Amino acid sequence: MQTKPSIVFCHGLWADGSCFSKLIVPLQAEGFECITAQYGLNSTAEDVALVKATIGRVSSPVILVGHSYGGSVITGAGTDDRVAGLVYICALAPDADESSQTQQSNFPTTDVFSHIEVADGRIWLRPEGTKYFCGDLPEQEQKLVWATQGVPKPDLFQSKVEGTAWKSKPSWYIVGKKDHTVHPDLERFFAKRMGATTYELDSSHVPMLSQPGAVIDVIRAAANAVGGRSMTAGQ
Image 1 (tube, rainbow, N blue to C red):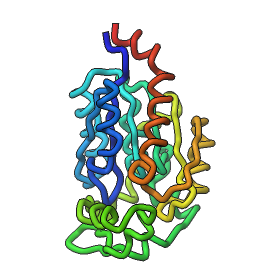
Image 2 (image 1 turned 60 degrees about the horizontal axis):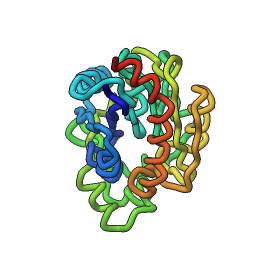
Image 3 (image 1 turned 135 degrees about the horizontal axis):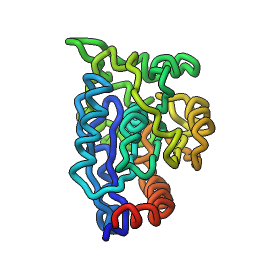
């Protein structure tokens, strides 16, 4: 019998699954089955489909953990019956008629977006942009974040998500109070709208790297909350 939910991690823009490495190793040591969805940032529909395929590689039920744009992805993929709960980390959480761009336009933050470059059909984060993206990390780690960045297609910001999982699944939300990529007030708006159990951390946009212990505590809380449901569903 599956006594713990599996955990599927979904990365944001300018990232890949390695951004969750500080969470995965400790959670695996606690007996959680973990995997990251390594999608291409080509279209939201493709990214959601890849997450659903990744769910099929682990024992359900699943907790989806989405960072930044990954919140849009888990909002779509989380409608899957195998998903028991959602954890949002400084993440977008659009409704069916919203895109990442429409929401961020209501709560603009230009710090990171002043340090990007569109070239060869992709959006690239410039090296100096890491100061605003992950400024609470040591310089060496900031350089690693830049070196491992994902590069989204420009129209990814305009994509809408089919399905709104936070309307039917229990949700947890981590607000980064020093976030210069997604405005903290937009994060609070998302968390309040979905009725999420909300935590605020004194962090940049990447608390899973700067404060991994606190983020693991939130994932544990979500796992404990859906544990009974998970064991029933696994029978």
